[in-house]
Picture (tube, rainbow, N blue to C red):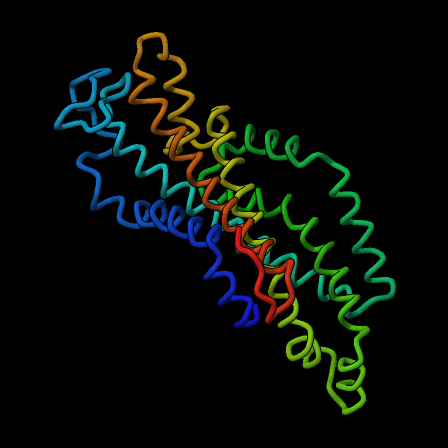
Length: 282
């Protein structure tokens, strides 16, 4: 992304709020093993205990510390979010750019494959595959990337087809530059905003999808997730434990999605105005 765009993004109020919220969640995920007072799988001997000095958010139905599981759930969400967003964005950039630069029959075949993949509801593929594989974090990331790259690749392809028609690109070919050099020097820098927007949208979609699959119980049983915490808490909500078991997990998931949404709002506000034009921040 152009440095001026980056400065405007950092100075945007919505973007700064999003970075602060997401930074808090990311910090909890990175420092999780050093922050939690108990092993999230350890049986404490106290079942459905209310919050106390030893268990800050109480314990669940099998005596496990809820706060520890909440922090480890942040690690799962952040790993899936960044893994899916990064791999989906890179795949979309490589495939979309390559087919647009090559053109011809290769581009036609690629678009037919992309259209076929987009015509199938990705939710069905994810649920069916997850129910069969019961994926952990690595396999879940690969599964979400496999169904997430076509839309981004289509956008990148359209952008490259537009950019390659500019005068300075034709001038570069005239002076002897090859397709790879032209792409790296003249096209790739202009794809920064598209790639950044795709990264943010991919991260938000991955967080919600991972939580939804965990809530449905079709991920690995050894995976600690906010979605699985919510599912377990709902089953015991009639006992009143929802106040310290259900609400914190819902709040953590909501804050994470809200943080990514604010980042998207900030980026949209920056990209919607020309460089050098000072506009009202959101």
